[in-house]
Image (cartoon, rainbow over the protein chains, first blue to last red):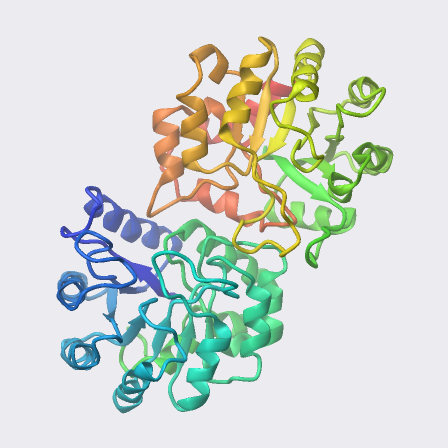
Length: 266
Length: 256
C-alpha cells in the first residue's frame, strides 16, 4: 500500500483551463507509481476569485465541495483534507465539522495565518476532538515574508505543536523550497510533528537527514505537484531503509495518524 | 544504454552532500543503471582558476571507463584555448563554462570568443542554468541564475557552436527554443533534470511541442537524486525510440 499524504486537485472555478487534464494526469501517474490513496486538498479557487493562500470563505467552501465530489467519484482512490482559512474562525470550524462529517480525514492549513498564531488554537483543538491530523504548508526557513502568502516555517509549526502535543501535525513538503536542514533541526525534538517528503526538491542527502532527524516512524510519503520527484524519493528510500521502515513511510505512519478506517487495509 | 550528461565529482561548498567521491558516484551509477556519466569537478567551479581541477578529473576518469570528463574552461584566463586542446586529446565529450560562477558576463566578449572556439573545434559547450533551487541557497551564495537571453545570445553568436544546457525548466526552454530560429534551436540540447513530470506534465508537453531530439538525459547528481530523471521517463507514455534518443542516442550523436 502507498498513501500520498500531499496531493492537490483542481476544479472548474480555478484559473486553470486544463484542470481536468491535470486531475486525470495525477490519477494516471498515481496508478503507475502504485499510489493506493491520494490524500488531497483544494485551496479555494486557486486565485480565480481570491488568493490561493488567502482564500475567501466562499472559495474555501467551493473548493472543499469540489474535493468532496471527487472523493465521492473516486472512493477507492481519493481522500480529502478540509482546507480552511483561520482568519475566519467560525467559518473554519464549521467547515471542518461539515467536511469531516462528509468523509474527509484531515485538515489543511495553507498560508493564511502564521502557524504559531493563537488563531490556530481553535482549529488544533478541533483536530484533537475529531482525531485528525493537520497538514501545515511550510516554507523551509522563511527568512522574510514572501508575496502572496503568510508562510510559516518549522519553528513556528513546532510552537503550535508544543501547545497541542496530542495533535499530529504534518510539516508540508520538506523538498518544497527553502532550507530543509533548518526545519529538520527544529522538529527533531517535537514528536508530534511528522515530515511530509513531498516537493520538487530532490537534494542528495536530504532523505538521509530526514531519517536521522525524525526517524522512519515520523516520515510520510507524498508528492505535491511533482509526482516524478516523489517517486524518485520513494525509490531511493527503498535502497536506504529496511523493509519494515519503508512500510512505515509508505503507509503505516499515515494509517497511525489519520482516523481509523481511512485506508483500505487499515 | 543510459548516459548522464550532468554529473559531478567532489565536494560542494554550500552544504554537506554525500556521495561525491568517484567510488560513491560509481555506486550511484550501478544503483540507477546509468552506463556512462559526463562528469565535472564540482569544487573547481568555485575556484578563481577552475581549470586547476581538470588534471584530477582526467586522472579519475581514466580509472573508470564509465566516466567521461567534462573539463571546465575559463575564457578570461591566458592560454584558455589549451583546455580545448587537452579536452580533445583526452576524449572529452564536451567542455563546460558557467560564466556567472566565474564572474563573467554571460554574453560578454570572453563567452562569445569561447563559443566561437567551441564551434570551430566541434566541441559541445555545457552550461548550467542553476545548481540549486534559488529558495534554499546559502545566504552568501549570490551567484545569479543563467538568463535565457544569454543562451539565445550565445547560440546566435556563432554559427557552429552547440550548447548543452542543464537544470533548465519548461519556461526557460520554451523562451529560448521559440526565441531562436529553427537552425539555432537545432544546436541546443536540454537535459531533463529540472523539467517537471505529472501532473503538470511539462516534460510531456515539451516533447510534443519541441521534439524528443532536443532532450538528453541528465541528473545533476550527486547534488540531486539521479532517480528523479529516470522516474520522469518512466512516467511518460512515449515510444521506445524516443526514450532511447533521450537516454543515449542524442548524446551519442552530439559527441560523435
